[in-house]
Length: 223
Image (cartoon, rainbow, N blue to C red):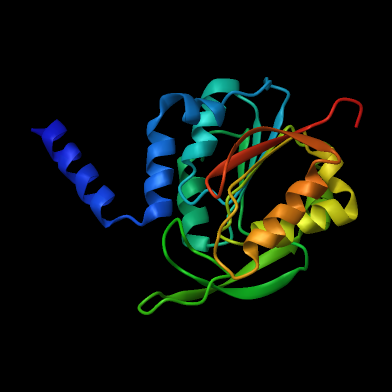
């Protein structure tokens, strides 16, 4: 009965989804694709920076495999509090109540669960909160992040500003792997994505890529 119920819900989600959501669902349904997002050369000494996790599930998956240090950045206080409770007994996973950007500021965020965004306009019926975004270079120093083995970025359109800042400041060369979900949310996002890919290719190489779903950039040897 439970299996039938899950199947029915999956069918309903598929029918209601747009083209992008269906591509994402198909990508995530393939076990080897989700494995890609966890298959890294990490160990207990590794440092993972999780930028935008909503519920902390990806951090839990990574820690379960590598038992490494994880810093989670979540600007929405309610989300951050829930993640903090989840890892309350794990000193290797720390949660911080702010997000990352190129310019430090306090800004409104449109609350839509795991699609909450400071970039896209507020949709009808969605509440807004004020959240703090830290300048990434300053946050790296504050958190003593000399080198990040894996940086996961899923921040609903804020990815462009953040990556542009990391490249402009040179901090991008202190990140071994950049796992990012670009978002097609504004008129110029495709152009900015292609520009970022060109710039990232100077220091990193792509290891997997599904447009506007997930991709990973690994630091080139010798950088």
